[in-house]
Amino acid sequence: MPKFKMIALTKPIAGKEKEYNEWYQNVHLPQVCALPGVQGAQRYKEAAALQNGDERNYLAIYDIETDDIGKTLAGFGEAGAAGRLTQSDASDSAGAYTVIFSEFGERVTSKG
Image (cartoon, rainbow, N blue to C red):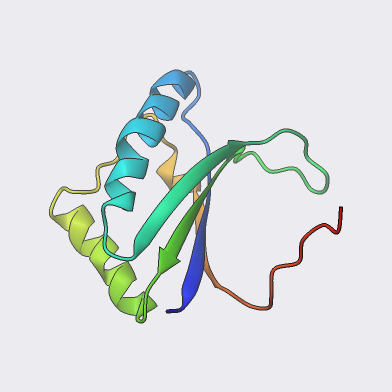
């Protein structure tokens, strides 16, 4: 089955970082992971900007396996319309960047 990574770069509304992190980790990720095709997700916080820093200092990587990525993404929209994907006023959703990548090439690992 084809594998995908959904990458989301996000940031909280100023002054609402604690609320944002609580919602994202304990509400949003479980809601997304309950959707068909989503295998799991993990969040990261920026540790160091190496090139062209970005104000979106949080990253979420979602693992998706599906034969039809279009249908899976349509399911995201349906879940949002049905209230199964909720938003938080602590999240700067207008400034978010989300993209889907399909698996390409073999994984390379350390020899040591």
